[in-house]
Amino acid sequence: MSSNTLSPIESVSGGSHGVQAGYEQMLALAERYERHAGDFVEMAGLGARVMANGDLLESSILSPVSFADAEVQVLDATTGADGLTVRAIGIEADALGVRAVVAAFKASDGLSRHATEMIDNALGRLLFASLPVALPALLTAGGITYAYYSTLSPEEQEALTARLTDDLGQLLHDHPELAQHLINGGGGLLESLVPGLGLLDAGDGPIDRATTNDAARLLALLLGNDTAYDVSRLDGIEPSLNQGHVPQSLEDLMLSLNDTNLLDAKEPGHHGAIQVQRIVEDGQERFIVYIPGTDDMSPIPQDGEHARDMETNYQLIGGLDSAYGRGIQQAMLDAGLEGKDVMLVGHSQGGMVSTSLAADPDFTQHFHVQHVVTAGSPTAQVPDLPAGTSAIHLENRGDAVPLLDGEDNPDHPNRTTVKFDEGSSDVGDNHAIRHYANGAAAADASTSGSVQDQIRQMQEDGYLGSGTVEDVSTYQITRG
Amino acid sequence: MLRVTTLMAVLAAVLLLTSCTSSDADGSRADDPVDPSAGAGCGECVEELAEVRAEIVALPDVEELLTLETYDASPTNGAGVRVEVRSASTGDPQLIDEVARIVWQSRLAPVDEVFVTMEDASGELVRGGSPFDFTDAGGQRAAYEERWGPRPVDG
Image (cartoon, rainbow over all chains, first blue to last red; front, top):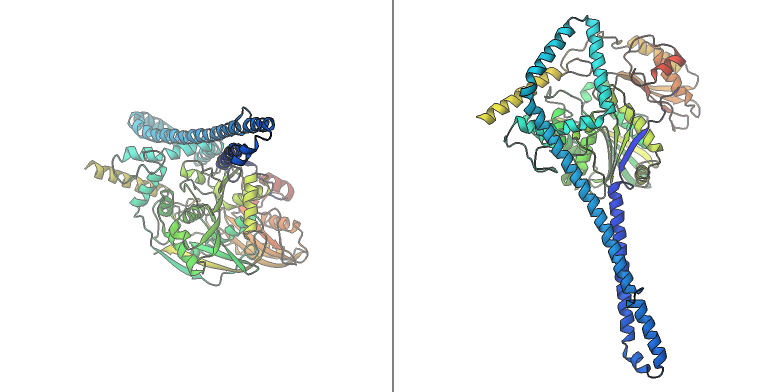
């Protein structure tokens, strides 16, 4: 009896077989067309130059008929109706056509994104604007509902609450795009609530109005936007069985990440712990950094010690630095990873910070980030990753957390998003790492070209499948 | 003046939100004292763990039980049990199911998930059905009940 029936993969976007990669391949094709057209024009010119050669012209007296025949043939092959020049023009036109199609597709993508952002922003504004009008009706409906609710027995109340929670969870599972649009309307809602406050840095997104990211930035600023951190090495923590072996698959990465995540479950004082796995093969070192997610879900941090709290979430969604991110950088420096090849593996907030760090020049000047693996993380707020970094983003249908960026992940050749369905109506449970271990196993078995290319690259880079684990060290990051 | 008012309104809304939602998944506040006897769980589960440990160690193919621990639910995982065993043989994945069965039939609670990691006698990891999802929503519960009988405790 096993629970490892593979979860269905719902979609794979981006990566080597994604839309953007397709655009780049089409543009590469257009470039080849243009090169060939240039070659043809050059060859046509060569024909004319040959015919104009002085020695050849002088020799034409010896055989005028043959010369005239050759001249006609050469001119026909170069500038004739089926000649190289005409063909070059045709090929050039094809290249131009391909470029025009790619430009049209890209413009369409941009327009679509712009329209979505505008609609979501307007939706958020509408929610706020309609509140005064709808308030009496809402209060009346709420009063009637509460009156009915209070007549129920405690058991019935519990059952009704459970039923409503279940229905809402099912709605989220069945229509994740609805939640995504509502979240994306957060910028508009807050913009209405705080008109002209000046804290929202509108205009850094695809539209000149506040987005979800701006709303998150405002919340981070309201909480103080603290980035002070402390880092300490935790000695005496034995690597788990999973971590003692070189990972063979994405599933193995998730299982090792789970073991890191559970460090503070066994010992609450170990909150904020990350682990660094050192893999050696033929004298070459690679490092995998396991980065768990949120410990403290309270909207306002409870004790001022946890680095993995909601303030960090707001900062990351808002594109700001965080204590967790800075602490991870320092921990990696303390672990001797300066200039080393690394892979970042994160769940939830851990995936957010991994993606953010991989795009941060202050971070990448110290480490060569080759791969990022995220699970249940909103990552669209990071628009681009460096060309030498590849990311794979795992998202479980019904998990609300990856939707918190309010939009789909960028469809880039170096970023692959895998959506799978391990979800149920239990929204909180859908975020658990065990679902991501199962989703990763499904991705391992997937025939998607983007996923398989990504895994193959991880193997070639020495993170999966070969070498030996020489060391696993643990660092704790707390607020300073 | 209007800006100050709206800023105060936002702060008030955030504070209100905090007071309403600053609880863990199980409804307990982060700063509340832990009551091991609360709810349907077995608390420290000392006796229950000892029974499970004895059963796992008694399995014919188990060379060594390296880890057996329970953990509470958090924002990133369900409540669960983590087991690491070393097999005496080349490693039959059936042993992983056997460990899950023992947990299922134990009085450990709450258990949403069970992670079992097994290393065979040659030092290689053997993958089986782990992780096991014991939640109602997980869709596996009926199958487990059919094969292993009902759980002796809720959760």
